[in-house]
Image (cartoon, chains in turn brown, cyan):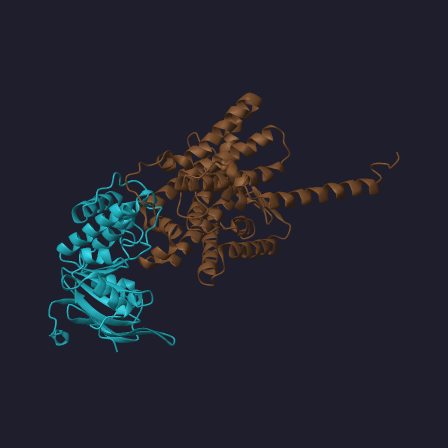
Length: 373
Length: 262
């Protein structure tokens, strides 16, 4: 607690409410500028911009729900499997049992909610930590999806699904984008105008105080996971419609992509700090980044590297900003270069030397470099 | 329900009688009585481990006594948890303030008891009304005016944060007894003075304020009576105007002849 009451708010404090927005915006502008110089013709084509929005739309509902989960100091690593399993069940109902598409999609959403509920109960009742609980449930859901679908690819669905996944019949924006933005609006409303939103922040900010105030902490945590499961199922439906096909192994990277978008958007992994607008910006940023990599003809697998790097840097940046805000700490460089890190450097040097030696040894033994050659 | 009225102290707001609390084999409180009246500040002093915190945690429903009972306005009442105490008109401001740093002052003030309105058939939060009400409570009852009600509570000073925590308790119309655990421990001199002023203001509004404090200076500045705890027992209750720093200190450490030591 600070000792004085008269200190004017620092610049960091004044900017605090906007940081979540400024951060991704700055990065988005950077990407735009970069692409404007390097590859303007192909990147800024209307069809490509449309593609970016389509890609982003898939992640909007999940990013909205993940904002709540992370704000409560939780995490959900099972969303890819929840999406795949609910989409597989939906596909089977449509293809094999001739269910009408609208009933099947509603069943998929309900199944997602059920899986979210199970996640929530595992975490709050069985007291399994979020990370382990949802990681284990990820295996369970993915396993069931594989059992159901084997290696099958279910394809060719009714028009309703393709309309949801990639249709263009609503005004100027693709239908999935409209759905995604509607979810974001719903999230904004939930966060600011409902008990659930208010308690989500208080639980993440101070769980003990929330409990003492009489808030049913566990119930509201379960709500967040149910919302997450439902939105993951919605993403499964969007994906099915977009590809007009689905298989049990679909959507493997949903969790990291969504977590990256939310964290980049300024929602704090340490709880209490939520930004729906930031999450939307984060989703757009990641889609633009990945699209830029594709446009630059960089191999697909680099996406994974890029996502990971973005997560690390944004978390480090926000942590540093907060600490600096509180303690007026030193520069960003001091995080890495501490005065007493000579031991760490020695370790680094030792590992580097071992690697170099082993590489040379390997080369010599493989005959890559001929001795006396 | 008049059968339970305590005839000895008709205007006592709180009357704790024969409170004993054991944790396993450890006796934290041994047969302690505590009485507090309307419009007074009762200070509870004592060394570490004297049972001050346990005593107020029983008063606020956090712990249940092993033995003994509590009367509020002469009515015996029992509490299963802290919410029961709040419903009965007893609330506490803890040392760590129990505030959510990432909410605004108004959001903290109404946390767990939000004001709502109807919107298209749904019950949603009435943020405007809460902000206006919070501003009013802070200004009119506590005399605290924040520069902005829209900042997060984490950016407030220690004293301002404490005002928010107090306002949260005062918000309940039926509040009779406010317990404060070390209200000045984390504050600088200026803010301490302001907080003591605030406690006096609450007393003058007719509240019973029970303050735990290590600072005898503060205790002598604000309290009307002093309840001294030592090793789980009450070793005396003295009028602040009839005693002095040294006497209370000697009661705390157990050197006094006036104490009711066994």
